[in-house]
Length: 375
Image (cartoon, rainbow, N blue to C red; front, side, top):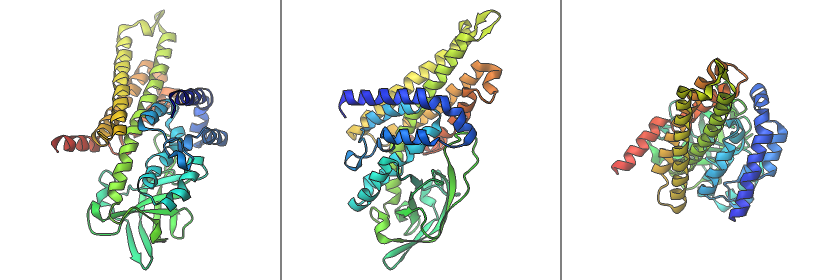
C-alpha cells in the first residue's frame, strides 16, 4: 500500500478505536457482545479483510503493515479485534496459503467483507499445545470424507459460517493430519454453548462437535497429510499479529496508569512524583519500547522470508509475558481502585492473561525457539 494511504488508514483506525470503541468497552463487557453498529463500521473500514489479498476484496497488507495496524487495534479491549482477527489470521490464512482457486473465490471475498466469519478448529481436549496428537478423524467414503470428533476453545465458533477443521486422515503424528472446509449448518456439526471465560467478554469460544459430518473431497484444503504444516504456517502469522496486539494493549495500560498517577494524590502530592511509582512506570515503558521494536523487526524478517518461525515465536513469547507484567504494574499503581470492577485496568488485567495461552503457550514458544537454535 502507498505509504500515505497506509498512514491515512492508521489515522482513521486510531480515531475509530479511541472515539467509538473504547467508550463502549463497558457495554461490551456487560452484554458479552460487540454492538452491531461497531461491527458494521468495522466492515465498512475494511477491517475484516486487512490481511487478505486485494484480489479478493481485502487490503492485502504486508506483515510490517499489519503489525502497525494491530498496534492500533490492540489499544481497545481484545474482544473488538477478535471479531475479525480469526478471519484475517489463522482461519483466513489457511485458505490464502493452501486453498484452491475455487475455495479462495468462494470464501475470501465473504470473509473480507465481513459477511462470513471464519473459525480455526484445531485444539482438542487432549491436543492443545501439541496438535500432532489430535484424534478427530476424517474417513474417506467414496468421493466424500466423514468427520468425527470434537474441538475445544474454538474462537468465534458460535458465530462462524465456515470452520477450518483439522482431522486425522492417516496414521499417527503430524503427517496424518489434513484440513477441511466445513460450512456451518452441515448435518452432524454442532456448536456448544459459549464458554464462560475469565476475561475477553464479547469474544466467544465454544466446543464444536462432529458426528458423521459428511463433506465432499473438494472440501480438503491442500494435499492430504499436509494439515499440520498448514496449521503451523498460519499460526506463525497469527503469533506475530498477537505480539503486536499485546504491544497495543500495553500502550493502553501504560496510558491509563500514567494518567491516574498524575491525578491521584497521597499526602498532598501526586503519586506520579513518588520515585517508587516512577520506577513502575519506567519499567513498563522500557519493556513496551523493547516489545514494539521486536515486533517491527520480526515483521520485517517475515516479509523478506528470512525468518517466519523463530522471530514470531520470540515476539509472541516476550510481548504476551510483557503485557501481563505491565497489566500487573497498572493494577499496583491504581492500588485498591485497580481491583474494582468498572475500572479499565481491572478488566484489561483479566483480558490480557489469555495472550500467554492461545496461539501457542509461552512454554511452546520456548520449545520452538530452542529447537530453532539447536537446528
